[in-house]
Structures are given as C-alpha cells and as structure tokens.
Amino acid sequence: MLAKVCSKLLIGFAKALTGARCVWKGCNPEPKQRIYYANHTSHADFVLIWAALPPKLRNKTRPVAAADYWSKTKLHRFMIHKMFRGVLVDRIRKEDSNPLEPMLKALAEGDSLILFPEGTRNKEEELLPFKSGVYNLAVAYPDVEIVPVWLDNLKRVMPKGHLIPLPVLCSLTIGEPIQVEENETRQEFLERARATLISLGKGE
Image (cartoon, rainbow, N blue to C red; front, side, top):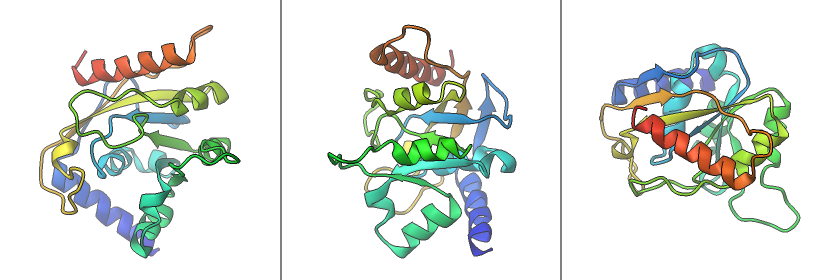
C-alpha cells in the first residue's frame, strides 16, 4: 500500500517537474512484451519512461538498474524493489555469474524491461557504443519487441553528481520496434539499434 502511494506521488512529481510530453511515434501503448531501450543521462531516465506508460503497461514493466547503486540505503532498496519492481544487475563481472540472468528471468515471467544499453549515464552529447546485453536478450526472446525511446533534456533535470532535481521541460519519443534480422551479427544489430535511437532523437 505504502509503495503504491509513493509510486503515484513520484509519478505526479516527475510529470510536474519535467512537463513529461510523451510521443508514441512508431508504435502504440499496447499490452505487448517489450524491451524499451533509451539514451542514459540521468537517474530520472527510467522514472520518466516508467511514469509515461499507461498503468496497465507500467505494472508489467521493470527498469533495469545497477545493483551497487540501488542497494546503498533502505530508501534506495524500498524504491527499486517495492515501487519500481526493478531488476538489479551486477556491474562487476564475476567468473561464475551471468549478468543477464535477472533480466532473462523477468522476461520469462512475462514482464517488459526498461534498459540503457550504453551501460552508464553519459555526460557527452554523442551516444556511447552499446553493450551486448540488448542483443543477447533480443536473441533469447525474439518475440519480444525492442523499442527505442529517445529522452530529450533529462540531462539537465538531474545530471550525474547532483541529488536535487531541477524543473526542466523534457520529452520522450517512443519509436518503431526493431528485432534481430536473419543472419545479422551482434555488432551489426548493436550499431543498427544505436543508429535507430540517434535518428529518433533527430526527429527522423
């Protein structure tokens, strides 16, 4: 109950703070299993994507987040586990572990994911090269739609190193789903997924 109340308050706060204009450009908000992938500039990124989804989709969509950051305090753990049902991944690679396992488990349970394939928040204007995770997930679950989401201006809301968000108008553009094509290599798919996101950001 407390988590639901806090979630609603946070959604209202996020929308009020950013204006939260969401444009569904390449698909509609349908109850399909998806991996939403986006550019990553702020802690507020996944919150805004999650808040922009209709409640039925939001309840089945889980942000992927760094375990080391979101396990720091009781408040962090409450937010990521109770409010967002987040999927935590270990950024430190261990020999006997598969960092994709929590995401594969969530997909197997029928949930959608919010993923940032750059792997870290990016302070530069240009997108960083994508990590392989989004390709591996797309291959493991070919029926799940891979949906690009361009976030505009979030960098100014809560830049890296800042704790207090600033009121800035922001927008999300949700593009057309892509999938791994026949005979497409890992690198080819990652470059195409990245190019698709850049084009979306340019309004193409």
